[in-house]
Amino acid sequence: MQDSTLPASLLAEVAPILDLEALVQHEDDNGVSWDLMFNEELLVEAFLDKSGDKLVLTTHVGTPTDERASQLHKLLLQYNYLWRDTSGTRMALEPPEGNVIMMYDLALAGLDGVELRNVLQNFAAAAKAWALLIAGSQTSDDAAPLEGSDDTPFDPALFIRV
Image 1: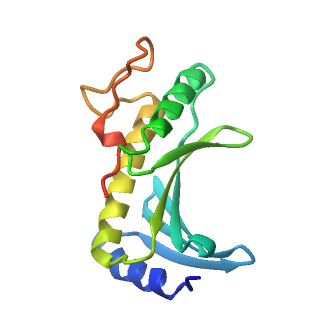
Image 2: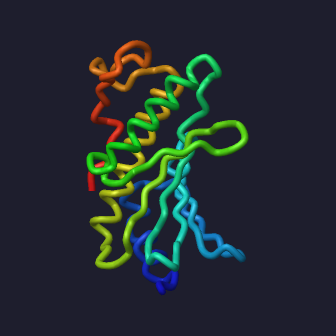
């Protein structure tokens, strides 16, 4: 079982390096969590999962329009299947509106400030790329449109590197 001391101190260490607008700790009956406000458009929540000695990072990356929902849902399932390539990042739909949530489990064992900073930077970059894709903007010229092919290539910006 992990107490909140290690993640709290590491988050406080990397917050200035990440140039966070805010870092806020919350404690309630569900445990300890932190809000990491990167900017007005990106809030990453870090939840301490004591049973697994990990931080669970989550962020809202958008809500697909009804017209694009089925194509995006298929893309999200394909992305989840690529767990080896995504370092275990997963996508989920938050009920009832179908908001897309990006999640990543970060083990606390052996975690240091450098690794935490790298993971958070990469997680934030991938979240921004997903937000653009879900909003209907492409992240780069190679990003595949949602319509069409069963062999949809993924823009490398959608992946996090650990």
